[in-house]
Amino acid sequence: MHSTELLKGTLQTIILKILADHGKMYGYEITQRVKELSAGTILLTEGALYPTLHKMEAEGFLQTETEAIGKRIRKYYSLTPVGKNIVEDKVSEFIAFIKTMSTVLNVAIA
Image 1 (cartoon, rainbow, N blue to C red):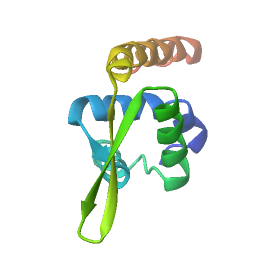
Image 2 (image 1 turned 180 degrees about the vertical axis):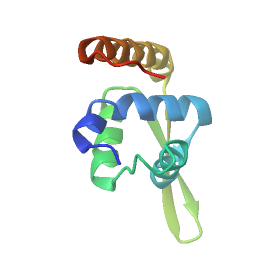
Image 3 (image 1 turned 135 degrees about the vertical axis):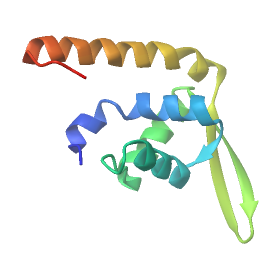
């Protein structure tokens, strides 16, 4: 498991990249995809995920649509054109940060 402090700074980038790769998804689906891709080392809680999704929607990165599934209403999130435009920048910025941290900490990254 990774610390919540480390995840806070990367959650937007993770969500942007997941939605860029998979299209529209609902919250639980996002948490499960992250869990799967991280081999269980990143477990997103509702308390971390939904405030971030709402913030990203307010910033214009995400749009939502609701769909009735039986008696439940499911809210799907997808990237807006603005969101699509910043994914690559956010990922590149994060990779550069990892490289910088590797240098600062004097450790090699596989």
